[in-house]
Image (tube, rainbow, N blue to C red; front, side, top):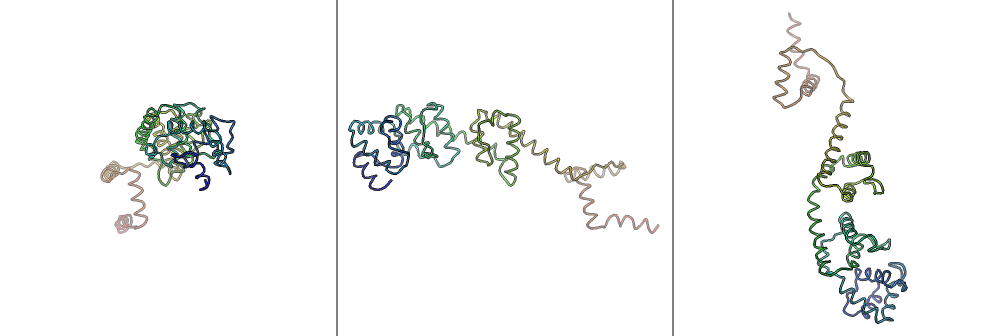
Length: 282
């Protein structure tokens, strides 16, 4: 918005702060309440001038705008908790739609992100005190909701992409309807947004993630087993006792003890040769 256009609206609507938030709401006001007065495409050239002309030529509309703005707008401080986090924005928008219905606002394609959420609140036509309470409730519920994010911590790390791919695969098989008409997730944030949009309780999410973790461990185990072969040996009771003692002492599995001993003997070549020398001399 140019300085001249801002001055034009400020001059007509004295006492009203002419900022981006108000301009967004004003365009929606004309589209929803006075569709016969077309201000043009959202953010198009001359949009603000056309709206200013509509207001200056109709005193009743001017009064109506001032009354609706004063009735609908919450103070900026009530909205400061709403950030540029895409996930938070979608969560809030979903809550508003649940309260108001899908036809509450039909935004232009280029009204997005935080501006869209604020516009959804600003155009929500309910008692100001009720709106203030609802928005405060959203803030409290969001902070509480975020506390359960720890169950998704496992996905963070160097294997994040592979873990998320596995999650998408298992969810698609276990809950095929859950992935229909939803944007498929590829990142950690998109994964969180996907779960936000389901009706699953925390316990259900936890069980599902536990199943994903279990499958991940199984896949990793199978990958390791591809490089291994099974052999059957007959050991004396004395050797088995020694193997068990070493396993208990170092808190390792029998096979891990054997692999360590074989690796060290292969590198050092000490113990077998020492054992064989007395036999060669006899």
